[in-house]
Image (cartoon, rainbow, N blue to C red):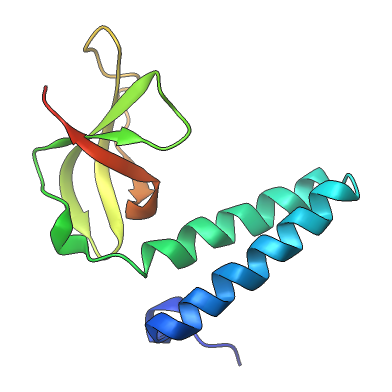
Length: 112
């Protein structure tokens, strides 16, 4: 049975990210888009466990990596997931539904 990322040491996570990144690159080169997407998502999750959730604050907004048109307003944190809403450039919520993002998808804190 495989270990969960929460059970990995920092060094194990670092190695996992390197291996997954290599696999993703190979899948992309071979044109296997679905496989590439799976590996990229695993990289995001592994990186989330390498970060400290204490570095992120509830009721704050952060840039979203790969989505310059939105910021993410955190309502609360649960483990390595930030729960809240995407806010578009006009300052409105992109959706009425709350969503969770791994903290590794969040960039710098922004002023609202």
